[in-house]
Image (cartoon, rainbow, N blue to C red; front, side):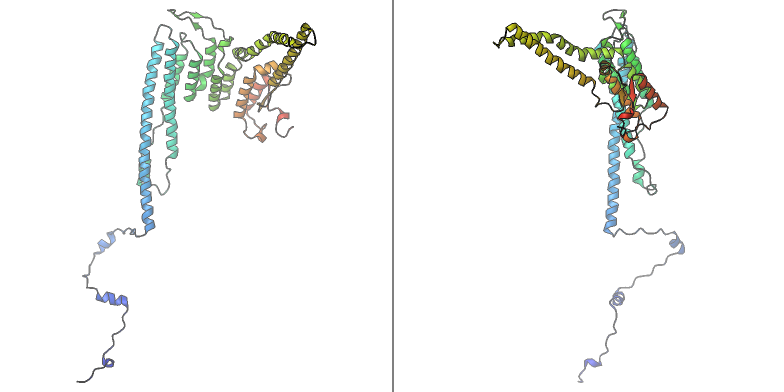
Length: 418
């Protein structure tokens, strides 16, 4: 046998790994497509092999689902509150009609229940309106890329309907109708509820007439049928508008951006003679009674102190102690009155004219503070721009203030004019 050598064998040709892999694969039958099939074929979507792409798609889907759920959850309380507002409005109608159709004088409890029903309906209507505005503000806005987005279409499909203006006007008129009948005696709680209702409904135009009616309305005599009335006393202290109620009415007028209405509220509340008399009785009468009793109390204390000494006659010691106590009390009270009536730290833009008596300054301080609020609401908020206001309303306010003994933006008190 002849020995075989490795050199005599033919060497294999070098083949790349990819070509070798293709050669080793089994044969596949060829597929033929018609030209019409190729033309009508739709392009394939890219495969979501990228993890970031998959995560983005999942996040958008979850966000759209969450928005749909939240929209459904917020629409249910809205519909429920709307239904409650309609039910409360119907209940208020029944209570008001029962009082208006009655021939006898209604009690304060019955009238207050009707006013509170109107106030409750106003709360529900305004709460629904605020929720509707908040939901519309948070609703997504349309963008060029959102026109073909089904999630956006679902979110904006059924926006909440706005509160009916007719319901607001109806409730406002219903509340005012309860205020005007002669048999209904107006008390501070009834007036406060009326002001609250009209302020919530943003219908404050009837507040000055309500204040005038509160002071000048005839007083029904209880237990009379048909009702009999006593003549009213508009200047009596009992006819004064309570300060919290007047402040709430002024806030409603400022919110309504009506300067004539705000000035009418001040005229019928803070400027009324009944308001000044009421302030005198509430805040000036106790100190005056104390000043009247001060000499008697000082003499009693002086007589007791005279018995504790032995250096002079008891009668002379009593007189000296009595004079000293009265001098101390009188000087301290005088300083206190002057400090209280001349305080001006609370003044912002409206001050008193020179020469205004201290007594009148003290009596009319609430009036000046109310006008100061109006000036601050209509003027510039920046202190360095004060004095630059112009216009018909501003000139009317300046004239109104000047006629009543006040000054708007005194030059020497403005910033940089010291």
